Length: 246
Image (cartoon, rainbow, N blue to C red):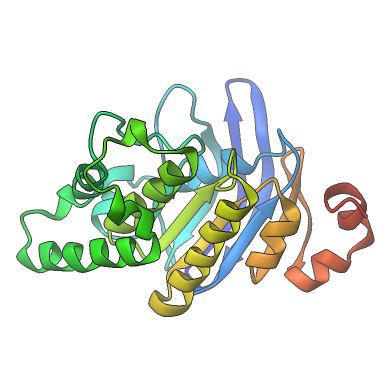
């Protein structure tokens, strides 16, 4: 098992956002978390990424195990340096004043003193350009000049450049036209199949998320209310009524 979340509780001040959720992800899987706004999806990802900032949730109970080891006391930069996991945040947060190529190079910077990792970064950059040809075409353009879809591609590419074997994505389809959205998910599936990257995706478009993922968990007000394969969740009457418009 690659990741195991055990009875995780997180809070924003006095407000508890997650009420003891538990789930697991095996290496090479694509797993989705679906649910309405405020369900706790982003809080889950921020907790897994161990981000420590004023607006981030605080873990108040439970544990997060990565390859059997607790990461609750692990600094976020250590997770990246050890190629464990990387987060593609909601809103992209690319560096708009840097070019596409500079954004990608910056993501690989923690490994720049290791010649082997530097060579590997070059290979990953080539893979990013292969997955997203638009980025190669615009590699000398500043990030702020890219379209929303291109910025999302860059955010994914930047996460890949860390060399992480586990990528988490928060609302990757937000603001994308349908064509670009499906292009994004096709590229991610290819990445999973070819490079065996494990993917955890938070997505409000439940239909697309379940088409993309192997398994899923449904969050509602900080609790997991359903889980199963994508086929099982798609056939679940309550899930269909609440999230699939059926």
